[in-house]
Amino acid sequence: MSYKEIDMNNWKRAVHCQVFRDGVEPSYCVTFELDITSFLQRIREKEIPFTFGLMYAAAECANEIEEFRYRFMDGKVVLYDKIDTAFTYLDEETELFKVVNAKLEGSMAQYATAALKKAEAQEAYFTGPLGNDIFQFSPLPWISYTHISHTISGKKDNATPLFDWGKYFERRGRVLLPFFVQVHHSFVDGIHVGKLAESLQCYLDDFE
Image 1 (cartoon, rainbow, N blue to C red):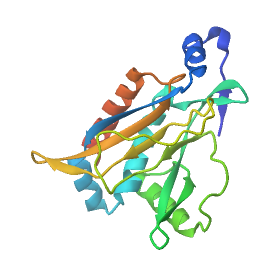
Image 2 (cartoon, rainbow, N blue to C red):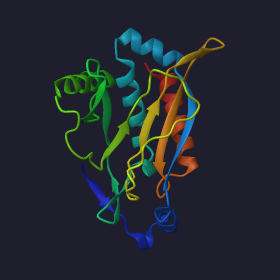
Image 3 (cartoon, rainbow, N blue to C red):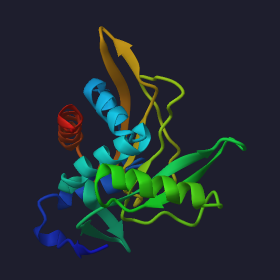
Image 4 (cartoon, rainbow, N blue to C red):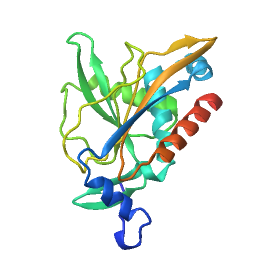
């Protein structure tokens, strides 16, 4: 993936980046609800698996927000042109999950087909360290929740955003989904999470 190194002397976020980079825990998480009523109906009509469809939608929206594409690399800050995906995929026999990498390319249907094929073909649970240029997805579709937390590597420069969601449910005739975002505060503030939430909801509402 292509990227550019950020000139810290002329970057508007340099001070904020350094302040949060030195924090004991520089990552934070937010859980919010998405209305998936229309989206769920349309992907069922198109026979696109829900998990892969939502991963594609979230990654597409996050890629449009610059702050979600910043990473640390060898102590420096870089901005990627595009971010791909990595996701957990359950082996139903062993009840253990694999971590699978998939490029974000093509239409949603094409991405879903390619990602599923790669997941089913992969034999190892882990194929090595995750790349820097991915969004990480780890859905928890068995329960609905109002808050969730994830394991932290302890590496302060690990700025890979993590997306998660729980079991969707019905409320007053609408289908709602708890959606979780974990980000590094050196790059992503609350306003950017808000932009993602708004963009993703619009994407789901307008999906054809």
